[in-house]
Image 1 (cartoon, rainbow, N blue to C red):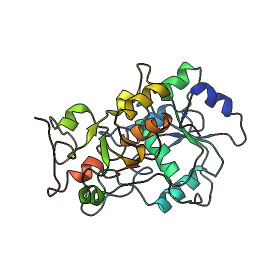
Image 2: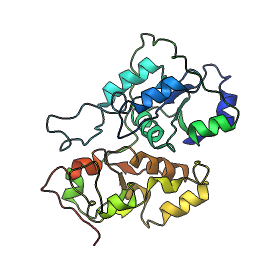
Image 3: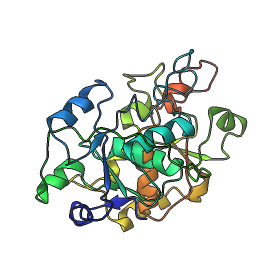
Length: 283
């Protein structure tokens, strides 16, 4: 399935049986409850809110960001339980969206693919595109969740890479960093332990996947952008600050037909928290 869906296509699919399941993933890294407030104020009809910290992340380890970073992945089993309570079932279309260019929606897209759900897409352009196409928002909460079994796990098809693997074979994989340029270069670091980047990493700011209208660039533009990395997609490892916006680059590559790249879930928040790991900066 194509990883993006237009607002017009979604409006047509809402008449399907079962109707698509909608997940509002709106969030703010600096305000953990901003997404929940935004959802309560207005969301696509029937949409659940997928909270970045409670639903799309697991608990932080006892050592904090040193193990797993700021937004560690939950276990696949735990997320399968959450997906089941939302109503995710094999064959049912799930559409994730946000109001932040798709960076949080992409995290949910990746995690659903990670537990084996193939029928999932990100709403291209998010809430703004929905409203521009004539779609309305509602503030009523979704129907109460029904008791449901966990999503039936299948073998993971979305690979992950850990810091130990990157350290053991430096240069074997091409690391792509999705953070803003000033953070990648090491000029500032507002969130994590150290400024800089993983030695050898290349920079691809996730917002550059979008056009001025907030929608993803056409397939050809995305393909050219990521093919210019010069390596096979399966050698690429994506990271960011905490494994969230890296999923935006993973989605963009898949939309371009470049599949098979891995995610480093702990990303810079995990890497930089351990003072024994090497750090690079631009000078």
